[in-house]
Amino acid sequence: MSLQPMKPSELARKAVNKEELFILDVRNEDAFEDWKVEGVNFEYMNVPYFDLIDGVEEIMDDLPKDKNILVVCAKEGSSVMVGEMLADEGLEVSYLEGGMKAWSEHLAPVKISDLANGGELYQFVRLGKGCLSYMVLSGEEAAVIDANRMTDIYTDFAKEKGVTINHTMDTHLHADHISGGRALAEESGGTYWLPPKDAEGVTFDYKPLEDGKTIRVGETDIDIQALYSPGHTIGSTSFVIDGQYLLTGDILFIASIGRPDLAGKAEDWVQDLRTTLYERYRELSDNLIVLPAHYTATDELNDDGSVQEKLSVLYKENHGLNIEDEAEFRKTVTENLPPQPNAYQEIRETNMGQVAPDSERKREMEIGPNRCAVR
Amino acid sequence: MNVTKTLDATGLACPMPIVKTKKAIKDIETGEILEVHATDQGAKSDLSAWTKSSGHELLETDESSEVLKFWIKKGE
Image (cartoon, rainbow over the protein chains, first blue to last red):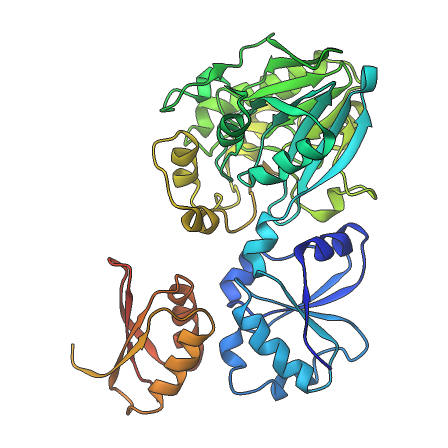
């Protein structure tokens, strides 16, 4: 048997299609505990590569003989070393091309819907980090919301669709990933919009996203309406697109709600979060479909690989929307929170333009899951 | 620090820094110290995890320059 490479896109397809796969993760135990490739029907085994340098005999009995095995490591090198040893033992084995770093950077568009007058709405799913971003297309124009750092994915897609990206906007100042909004606007000659209350420390020009602001995309007028919805950050802003979709940013997810502590102000912002979730969103139409900026677990993925649900369903099923007692709500969102995202302070500073790390450091900073939610 | 042996693993990508370290530590005696130089950022967490699992002791780490330096005391 020979060792085969597996591209992140192929692994993504397996995750979305809920296929079976046996993953031998050869990173060290802390790294594996912290973050791994998620799939509903994936099985895992974690043995650090440094325990396998002298041979794989000790783990042979624990590996399946009738299943595809994928060896995963941080950057690829160690998975190739271990993979070759397993292939020599006669196993069907592949390695993840580019390792967890490449997995973290993979994102692909899923069509959410057609919009009025020939417009379209796409969700870009970044499986490795659970980040969701959006592109609204209409006529010859497009807007991108919560763009990731890998801007070529959006520009290539826009080119393919024959549209120009005129607007990029972030629902808030992100703490878990580096925004591609500003770079994308610069590359395509568009405008970058940010909520002014999140932009106090920024070192560059932006257009302020204020409550009630309407941004038009294309001649056929797809409206993107800004709705001030603080709580995850003080500036957090939602968007209503074409009267049908509610982009909630990091305020409301499918199975969880946003955490208020990533800028160090949990106590101050918890009341804002409560008001947004229990009053402001409640006043909106029940028929709106919620499109969040993140998801946490793969069971939030629909069969088509998208992440979306009706607002009315979330008001029934999302625990974070059903905590009647205010004190209990406060406790839930401020105590026993999961660890903060990797390098979140440095990521915030990068997104404000205060520091400009090189691309290798940016990749390092984004290692790990998004951790923006309270479940 | 009394260093018995120095290993230059600069410019090498994972898994080579650990592969070489593992080999180099065989050449010194228990209680002696191996100094490792590496440029692969992954070496930090991997050397720390490896020394723990293999019974050696990571005495000190210097991350102040581009070349990362590690001092490992050989265990039993």
